[in-house]
Length: 45
Image (tube, rainbow, N blue to C red):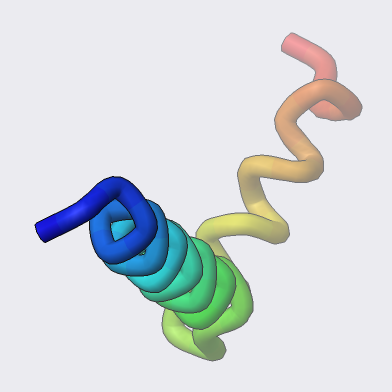
C-alpha cells in the first residue's frame, strides 16, 4: 500500500463522514430540537 492509496482511502472516509454529518443535521427528526436550541439565546429568564 503506497501513499497515494492511503490518501484516497482517507479522502473517501472524510467524504463519508461529511455526508453522514450533513444527513444527520438535516434529518427531520432533529428539526424540533435544533429550532429549540436556536431560540435559547433569545429566551429571557
